[in-house]
Length: 75
Image (cartoon, rainbow, N blue to C red; front, side):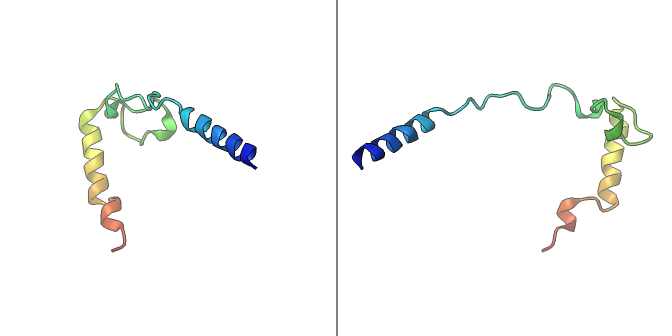
């Protein structure tokens, strides 16, 4: 019985010490958002990558047409 508890305790200590690094690269944040992804499926029609004013206008239009998740959330 003591041997089983000892083995389980050692296994728990090894698992706790085996944490992987959390400094993994995520999304490429070195590019401005208005540059887009380069994938046509994710690009709205009539918008060109790198068009900063068009990007801002599109976000304003989405907010004014009710696509604001915070405003639509139930209270």
